[in-house]
Length: 259
Image (cartoon, rainbow, N blue to C red):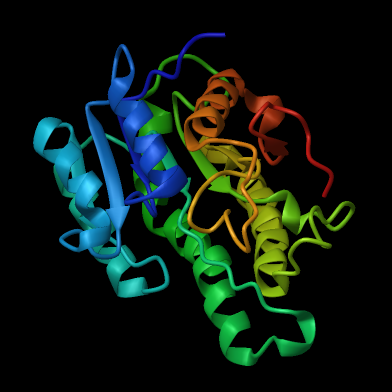
């Protein structure tokens, strides 16, 4: 199993947490990507300060304004990435941006469910559609047969909280809208794997573990995993995936997560 070797990658929700961790690890690779695109809602805002600092030191890091719930923003981001790639394709799209509301079932509303579902499920759907031409181009331009994340892949960051078989952590957190959105994201990943297989694009859903992020830490509970440990594990998993893994739901250690 070798290290991921990609020319270009786009990470959504890249200004903090797991998204920022992915960006940092891609930049530290022995052979870093020529292009690391960091999608961020407010590139000039205070929450993107660390990302801005990284971009000032790494010319291969480009911050892309991107609101994943806005079709116009997605379209503009895809056009910008296509322009910068200059005729080559995009190897990996990592749909990481997500929101969660710790709402009990009887308190859920149309507004919270719609907002969470739009960001966590519809966003990755629209991003997959918008970047499909660039992913296809990367798959076609890569040598050899079969699928891999070094060729072309859509990686949807999911959660075992969306597992219908084993809805982890229910006693700690209900997060009903979040769970529903992630269960739907798992099905989207499966649908993408079926629809995009003919183009040579590997599609997978990944559970990053319970990670120490702003969203992962709540009510005094400290998650067991650091961002660094989670991202290292996920990159190791991504480097090992092949055609047999497309459409699966795996965790940060490569174990199959029950649906």
